Length: 281
Image (cartoon, rainbow, N blue to C red; front, side, top):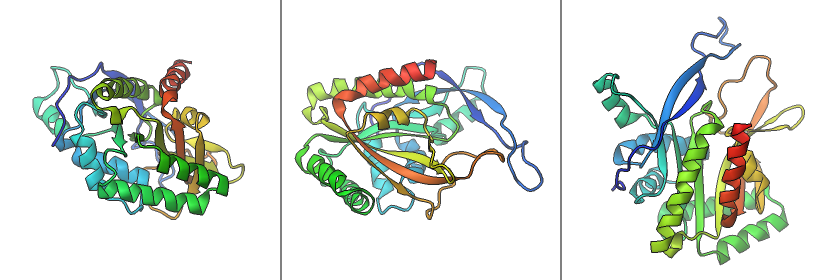
């Protein structure tokens, strides 16, 4: 079941890239064209299921996790988390608005209460994936830190900050602020939401020649800088059509990665403050 519908938050203008008219005959993308759109955050509802699942899929790729069940968990939470939708004014065609209400989810910012949902199969699969990846890609010290946090932390949250590529970092500020406020409210009634640590999975790329790290969602570099524990793993062998947009023809070749970030929950407010300063600079 979906949580209660909340009023749309103040619309946020954003720009995205449209390459439909900027390709040569061989399909190489040579330039960007700006499209102005206004978005707003809304409480996830049942009609958002497929859009949420699609966003989770571009994060997890081929990992063995029941993303349908995870999407249902995100929808079922009452008053926690937002989906990003395009906002419309009164002059827009009513039929188009209705269709968009049903289908278009451009992003999701939310948290899954791993402690509360520890018996749910998709959460157990998430923990198994984390253990498998850390053993394969992290050094022994990091593995021990992750094991300690997972085994000794009862209030652990999986923080999701996912959206379509080319929607800029500015959009993350109201969504993250709203999520932080919602967590502050709900933990007064349900202490299990008084998280001790958050886990994130961030989409990154590395240039082939210099190993320069590029964050698909720019603001997530600030999360990474505050990490208590982190490690990376290559996903170039997995299908990932929505990883990081379409690169300009003159750009360097990049290799797709994922980065697991674990940070103390009391850092979240400060991270959001830093993100706000970053997008305003």
